[in-house]
Length: 393
Image 1 (cartoon, rainbow, N blue to C red):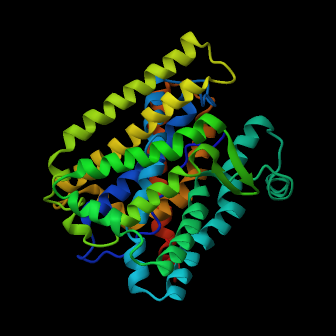
Image 2: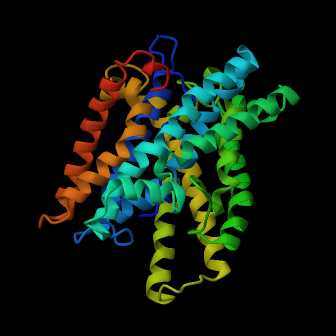
């Protein structure tokens, strides 16, 4: 199973629980983590990812939506906290923390968690395969997929690049920050910037590489068409968070928190247009191996429009409705990063176990999602009791 839609939690956000934390951003982060688990729980039951006898078109709709926004949103959210961290920490402290929280989990994950996950797929194809032989072949011959944790090494690279940029000029992102400050009353200005810049960096790459190509060196992988899209969202997020985070675009009493429905409508329009193009590809173009440039360019435009609009809609929602009071997301907040790290083998083995059951796809997906949430949550809670583990998880 290709992991072209995988995402991770925002590991740049520190795992504290003090009252100074931004509750809205914490809940947005945890919500996105749950979207990752939902995505992986249902993708086996889609039309295109059909690795199970059962499928349902509704899951194609879920996967199309999540794939089109949550990676960009994760990188934006990760970027929010980089500039303040660099301003208040010594360089060696920042780098040590990033290596410990990102580099160490990635190395451990690609050597253990990911092979355990993909062994479930290997057994479906070769029931007599031994795990040790599969593991050795994976790390020596390949392919050596990194699954959803590809996000971690990419985020680490972005953090290292941010260190360089900050020390070259701490004021480098001031223009973006000024626009974010004006976003208190005029969020549309920043939205236009996000849309314009991401269209410029994404559409040509999609036309040239297509949607399915990945750059891969061992376990280091990245989707070719999004090589420039993700650092763009990360840098915009860093610019928004460079200063006055609570008095600009992401202020609880700003315009963004009061105009949520307009962003939802914009996102729905772009999303529907993506489905129009999918219909054209399947029914009119007859699913060609190579899609024409006009198709890829049009898809790319609707893709970045949906990504930007849903990002604004998500943050607007949590700023307005989830700023205070009780939420079940608060219970998971401290465990969000760990749940991402351990969830993938859990969900793939549950899908392996469900494969031969003759039940509807909706039932299988529901079992997979609920079980994955509970088991990854419980496992993370247990791991966090190990001395020193909370520094990573």
